[in-house]
Image 1 (cartoon, helix red, strand yellow):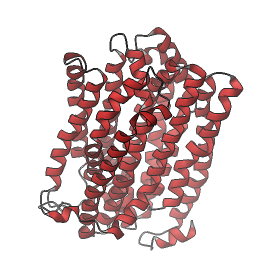
Image 2 (cartoon, one colour):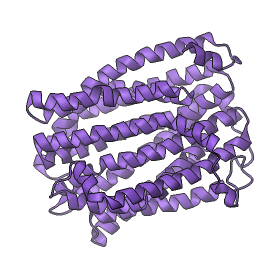
Image 3 (cartoon, rainbow, N blue to C red):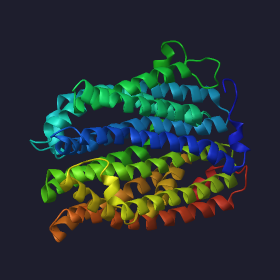
Image 4 (tube, rainbow, N blue to C red):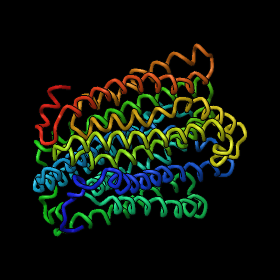
Length: 465
């Protein structure tokens, strides 16, 4: 697709586009989730220390969420802008957005690495590390932090590859990182006896190899979207950067809120259930995250389709891709709900041979995902507002579930129930409330889109909503 323009986004049937763009995104995001799960599975089976190591890994989740937040601030905003600019056939500015993303990702990655390495132990203790789990969390996070710039740049540019009409290439890169990580993990962890450090090293090394190809991909001057082969690649257009960061603010705040919530989850679980309860959450979170990542794959598939058609002022197609994507996402979450409620024991057993940790995780999985079927709809709706540049609504919906609803439940329910069970039940309660709020916003948006005729100025939509 070296010299072509993704005009198919505006003319192909929506069902075919969802298959073409969402399926690679789903495969890529599922593979990305498995990428994280592989680390947990191998770490959980390290002789004698597996249970504590998996608890130590859970301690790093908030810090990794912060890293992800800064990555999405730059990457998601750039990918969304590029989708809209391609719909407007504004290729010169799209290339500037791409160059901006490279520089901003490198800068944020380096700053994050420096701050993390300087205050590693205090940060990890703040996130719930005990004397028993701190060494494992530190060993893992030190290596991950050193490769942070690589991680930011790879994932950011991978999103742009997908948004520029190359979903299969983006998928292939993700599959490469997953496969290579699955191969290198046992070599480093067990073969070289590096333990949890080996898992982290394998992760960073696989992302670096994928980044090398990604940079080569965008340095091809024959592509309509490319990086200049000069120092211009590092020049920042601050006006474009401001617009890009504004769009990425929604997912940034969502991930930042996730960090705050996970911090409280860790602290409450350790307080009411001990280190093993924290390890149980690490397992449950990995399992639930697999289905969440599938939904994110649908989001990635919807993003270029909705963004392009919104830029091309084809509002009927925007509405159609949203409704159909939300329907598929709901089916995926329903399947995740059935797995959680019917087969919690066999699912959890993949991660740990420890019977006590197994029982805690199986019980937590059933309670945590009681309202799982409604999560997909909420995620898809939030992403649609982001795709259409409606930043304030995207931010509000991103934060509502976690900060407005989940956080108070996590703080209030454990003391009332006098156990960590209160933490698990916080999730279905907040999910239900958030879905009701999201439905209100979704109905309003769909009504406004229905009132617009193809070709109308999109400013009309913004003024009416």
